[in-house]
Figure 1 (cartoon, rainbow, N blue to C red):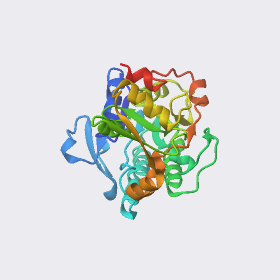
Figure 2 (figure 1 turned 60 degrees about the horizontal axis):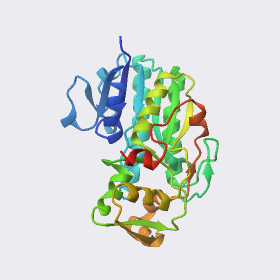
Figure 3 (figure 1 turned 135 degrees about the vertical axis):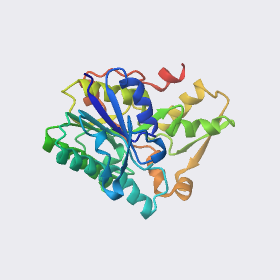
Length: 296
């Protein structure tokens, strides 16, 4: 009998891509807050505001992959920050409370976290033992992981994924970057020599699959490509393989702050996620460099 995996964030790009990695070996069950997506067979409804989750999604569940979260690149209004926190932390708390009350024994809890754990505006190399940042995004990431770590109380193995910029042709950073390139232009934010940490969506899915199958994968892991690159190098590689004639325009960070506010700190670069722990775990990257997937 196949193990049953519950995945949250059904409509997100990562959850959708992960399906192809897991569907042949596991029974996949999803939770969604979008009633239109519910089929009460493999996709069930939950509502964190009303402390409701369809128990059918949890009964018999062996693993949870918690990927849901209100997009961090939405405006950082007070209301949206509350949504970002609730959609990550309150949902994990709800899952834990329901699993404990139902007596559901979760073997593995894999939770999405973020490189924001180390703080906005940090310009340094960081590993999983580096200190927690001091801003609201770091606090959110800390609460996010703390909510996941509760599952240790019911004997679960916990894996927290501190995810960098996700590369995917159909979503996220790369999709936004390619759009102006189609018009012959792209931009870099000054200073453009700051480190840029990223990971391909297939390596995220690959590591999640690897973590499910390997008991030695425990605790936080930096999710990034292994080689250190700066923002300009990343943009130049994208340009080389897709839109060779696109012109690169530098944009001062203060202009990005005017347009995006604090969100500009997320995409300006500066933070290099060291991946020694991931590499030492035995995981082999599918796409360790920009060129390794763009040239295809």
